[in-house]
Length: 141
Image 1 (cartoon, rainbow, N blue to C red):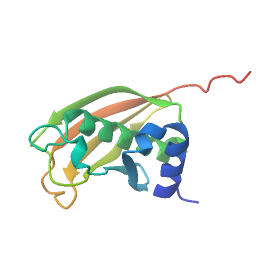
Image 2 (cartoon, rainbow, N blue to C red; image 1 turned 135 degrees about the vertical axis):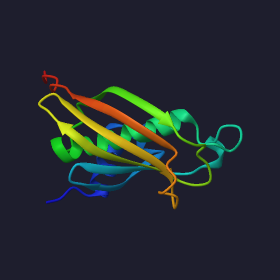
Image 3 (spheres, rainbow, N blue to C red; image 1 turned 90 degrees about the horizontal axis):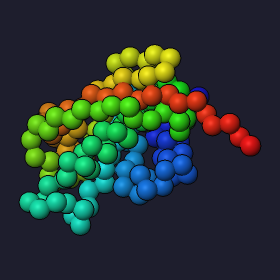
């Protein structure tokens, strides 16, 4: 059965509730996933801009969601490196971050992410490359 955005949202709400408070899985499919930051004026930086840390978090979550398409709903994949390039100011609506798988190895997943404001996909606000390390599950006692 294919993984649905609602499955991802329920899983994240259980294992990482602070992320679930501000982000949603907008789409998920083979080797790709989109995270959505829900626009909230009180969380904007001066100039009514979506902050760099918020954009970074959206990209990071999109990569994590994308890892689920390879590993299943697995919490033990963690960010190992990310590089973000800001292309233009981000303002005016929900922020979307679409991650696409570049390579899946035994211990590392590599991907790229494009970020844009909802309705303006042709005007990206940032580009990210990153990788996730697949960690061994901790032994239960």
